[in-house]
Each structure stands twice: as structure tokens, then as C-alpha cells.
Length: 199
Image 1: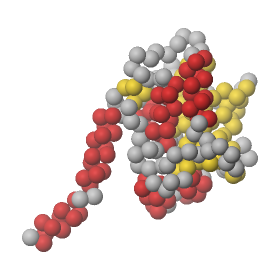
Image 2 (image 1 turned 180 degrees about the horizontal axis):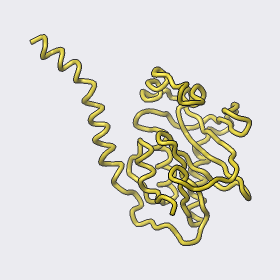
Image 3 (image 1 turned 180 degrees about the vertical axis):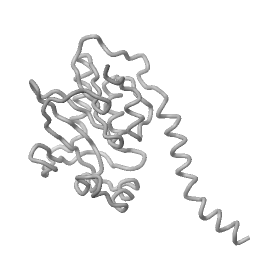
Image 4 (image 1 turned 90 degrees about the vertical axis):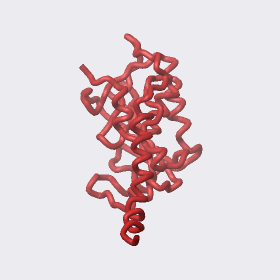
């Protein structure tokens, strides 16, 4: 009897994890804005991924780009490199810290590849996308220095959790623009599967 109770106690945490992964497996593959098609001519943006985190990169002038990413404040500020990641920081972010930031990074020109995928938008779609990004900033918030002289963090709206991740934010912005994406995109792959690889 004690063995059965102990087994149930040990297996109990696996149930919500299993439900989470099952929901991701289904909702990440259900399209939103399913009728959308990429125009032959339009404004090119990029969807960027490092395999875990996704962000949106917009043109900022000839040969210049600006990357936007949303996420947990503590994780962003205290994890400049993957080797700086701590289990407590990850757990706090997944549970929901209640504080988020927008990471804004100025970039020089770069080449499209597996992790930097171009996407063309119509002018009205681009305008909606920019508005969705702008609405993610907390009005009047003071920025703090980033990892380099070319990036900064700004207070953001919304709470980060396992249900609302940086990738869910990317999916939300793409939905707002009218772009075809997944219904729920908690992982980077849930965002990137809808963005064609560059040819």
C-alpha cells in the first residue's frame, strides 16, 4: 500500500507536464489565419530563433535591423549566456514572475538562414505587426542596459509563465498582423514551423 502511495506521489507532477505537452502538440499545429499567403512583393521582416527563444526583426534603415523579444525580466537580465542559466531562474519564469521586459537589439545586416527566416508582409499587415509590438511596451518605462552597447531592456506589459512564453508572444504578434501561425506557440518550434526556410 505504501509503495502504491509513493508511486502516485512521484507520478503526480508528471500529469500536468503530460497535459501541457499534449496541448502543445495539438494547438501548436492548428493554424490561425489559415487563409494567409505571403505576398510576392512587400516589406521583409525576419523571425529569429536560437532554438529556445524567438523574436521579430524589423528593418531600421539601409543595412540596419532592430530585433524585438519579450520575456521574463529576471531570466533576461540574469542570463546573458546559456551557461549563466540557473534552475531557480528557469523555475521562477515558468511559474510566473509577473515582471517582463522587451529586449531591443540594434543589428547590422545579416544573411538569412535556418535561424533567421525572412517573411514578407503587406503594408497593412506590417502596420498591425508594429502596433502589436509597440503595445507590448509598458508606457513611460525606463530602460536598462542590455548585454552590449547596442541593446537595451524596456519594461513590458504582461506576465510570463509556462502558458505565456516568449514564443507565445511572437505568435501573438504574428496573429495580430494576420499571418498564418499556430493557435498556441509555447516552444520555438511552434513558431518556426510556420515560417518557410530560406531558399
